[in-house]
Image 1 (spheres, rainbow, N blue to C red):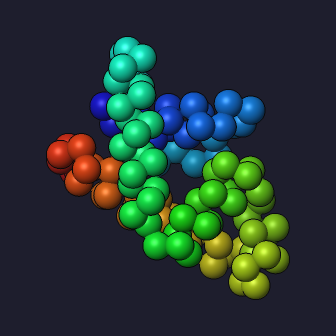
Image 2: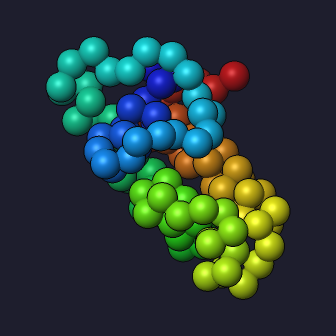
Length: 105
C-alpha cells in the first residue's frame, strides 16, 4: 500500500487540485474500510510529529500555501521551508510505517 499518503492527503483536502510533491507511489486503498483505516493511521502519525514538523506540513499540504509564504510566516527562507517539509514528510512516512507495521525500503 505505498500510495497511501497521497490518497489520504487528497481525502483530507478534497479541494486540493494538485499534489506538488510525490514522495510515495503505488496503488491506493482498494476499499472504503482500507481508506478509513489509512486515514486513521495518518491522523495518529500526524499527532506524533513535533509541532514544528506538523505545522509546516499543514501549511504546505492542507492550507496549500506556497513555500515562500510559509517562509514569511515562519521567518525563514524558502529553501529552509523546502528542507523542513522534506524532513517532515520523511518523519511522517516513518511514523506511519511504524504504526502500520509496514516495512520501508
